Image 1 (cartoon, rainbow, N blue to C red):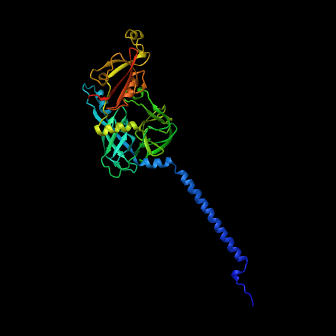
Image 2: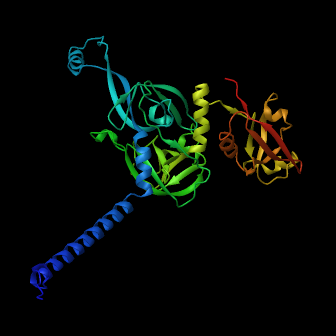
Length: 388
């Protein structure tokens, strides 16, 4: 019996070549999978929470286009020189010329009814107002209401179909050092598109009380969020967003020697913005909170006069004026009382009472700690609306 070997079964060079080729293909496949895995990991690391937050909120950010029409009286130089040359007693009347001044600010849609939030100072001088979305669409808007003191305004888009809106968060749990994103249209009039830009920073400080002189006495910038996220001209009215893509503040102002960003930006906390917004939508205005009294800082008064009045407090606010039919008077506050605290906040100057009262809304509770002839008393009442 003879044994026959088939060629395919015979170990030779061709067999090893096939094995080598298969091994190379296998290892090349492994290397390709490893590269793909690395690229996938890099892509995943690029898509951070910050990127997701910008993608979530960015489409709701709008450009607010403001046109202010200024009218000026001008005389044609030719006729002016002609009249003077011939010594005419009656000069011709100057003509009125209109000049359009354009500016741009930021805002954002915040509900499915087409309401847009921005700063009041962005729109306060507007004769013509329009809004442009990120995709370039122009939207007609109407003014719902504004509050000059808190520097907020609400607009409403006339056509509310297919409009994105941002999700509002809370500013009550903000932490110093957490990431935030300022989104808006800085120097938007220098760009050829309406795409908002984003800058990233951290919460630098909370509950900032900006000196009243900064707002000229008309605006009270209190309890502000400070951030080092770059805020520049044109950012006003845009959202300050946390890493979850929630709006936690409205970018409002910067401290700068040059006019540009220097890492000192301030935003109005969204919890106060929500309450102001509710009033503007419901009433078309912010109802004026009223306590019904005025005072002077003890430290500015004559110590001898204070002694004669039996006032021993070294600090606080002396009540010097009060209306009889005011919420404070009806609750038992008296002239000559020294206010030491309002809602657990120590006060030494009347402006501190202003700051606190302007953070309150009609119906909110007020608790005063007062010194009356050496006795400390608690006086409680609720904020009322000042008659218009």
